[in-house]
Every structure is written in C-alpha cells, then in structure tokens.
Image (cartoon, rainbow, N blue to C red; front, side, top):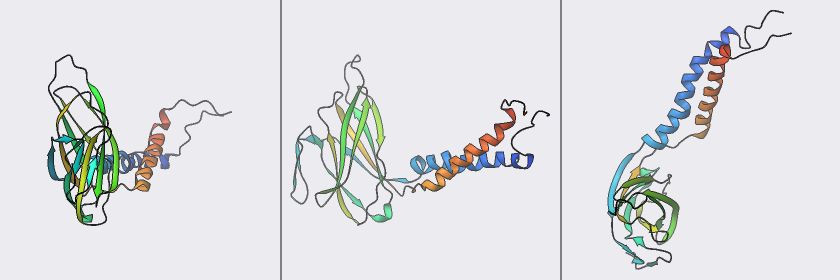
Amino acid sequence: MPESSGFVSPPVKRYGPLLLMLGLLLGPTYYIFCEYLSGEDSDTFVLNERAARWTLPDGTILHISNGKAFRPVALKLDPEMNRIAFRLTFEASPAPPDTPKSTDEYQITLLQSDQPIFERALVATLAPGGKTSVETDRLAVYYPGTYEFLLQETGAPRVPVAQVTLVVRKNIDTLLLPLMWGGFAMLVVGLAITLEPYLPRGRLR
C-alpha cells in the first residue's frame, strides 16, 4: 500500500490555526488576565509598628504567641469590591553586605467583629536592604463594614523588615474554570492538528 499521507483529513487541518488562536485566548491569556491584570488598587497603608499584643477598636486584646504582629489596620470593605486581594510589599532593613538572603514566614488574618474570616500563610524572601511583593489569593466579603487586617510574624524573621506596604486590590475578575480548561483543550487539539504533518510516521501495511 502507498505511504499514508497523514491521519488528519485536509478539511480538518484548516481548523488547527483557529483552535490554536482560540486556545491561547481562552486558556493562558484568560488565566493571566484574571489572576494578574484585572482589578484595580484601592487603599494603601504603611505598616511599621510591631508588638506582641494589640488592642482592637472594640476593646478586644490580641495576644501574639509565637512572634510579633504589625499594628492592625481598619479596612472599609464592601461586596461591590469583590473579588478582593491584598498586595504586601516587604522592605528589609539595611545590614552588612555579606548577610545572606532569607525566606521568612508570615500570616495574615482578616477579622470581622473579632472573628477571623480569612487566614493565609505567606512567605517573603528578602535580602538585607531589598524589597519583595507578595499577593494573596482572592476573597469575597458579603457584608459592608469595617474589617481588621492583621499581619503577624511566624517567629522572629532572620532578615528584619523595616516596613510593609499594604495595598487593597478590588474588582478582580472571577476565573471561570470551565472556560479556561476548554481553552487549554482547544490549544492542545489545535497544536496536535498543526504539528501532525511534521510528525514521523511509519508505512501502513
């Protein structure tokens, strides 16, 4: 029998570039836009005071057992801001040039009426005198009001932090997982159709 001319018929091959384009738009491009490019910055706060305990406006005393916490920040949040994220920029204190870079652990807690409604652990990798930014995953609030944001050290940081800048980000788009995975599937199929003529194939017997 003659050598096969391919496993994909010519009419189907025409859809390869189209599926590639749609897959790129609905897969990785859509993901990057929702997670990193959508939304806008709201309020900004500078945190530089730390203590082992703080008193909230309602009189509740927070005791920090395994480190220190920055002064709690009162945030006015509203469901119209959903989805919300927090971007934290850590700025390290100066130190001798030979001091190594270090990765230290922190915890953030968002409280409503002294009850935690959002808690996340995060790490900050810093060199002395340097800075780094970390953004939390997204959350939604269901009631407008004042919330308390608490940033806590988990133990003593090996690279001391001079200050942390907190930026509240709002109106971040919700990632629709079926749409995103459908885009990745189109990308894979389109890539397979486009590359099929260039793949080695044996003779049909």
